[in-house]
Image (cartoon, rainbow, N blue to C red; front, side, top):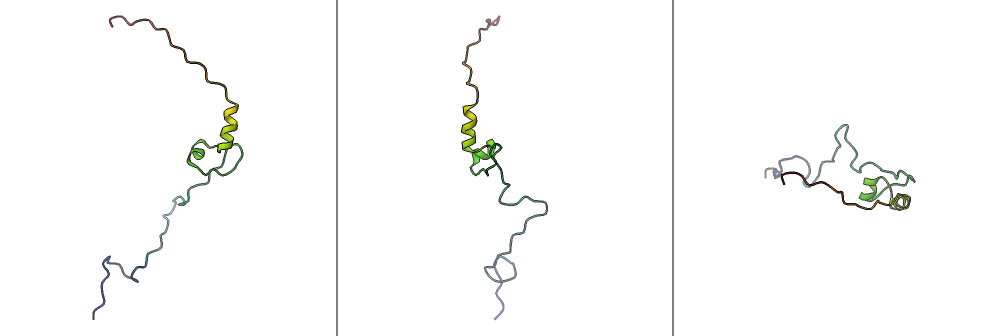
Length: 82
């Protein structure tokens, strides 16, 4: 009998997968490590990574921020012709 050809057209053992190799100058798959800007602990969740602060440090920082000023309507003259 003749040797069977594999349906995918590749040589080698049946079911064997090629090992993935990273391209030169590419970033690691795991992503880079992001640390909290206040305490230096590694950040794990998406919101913390976006803010650059862990949840505890964000809470500490929110206690020190100024209160939001009240909203006031602006008095404006009526535009002529409308």
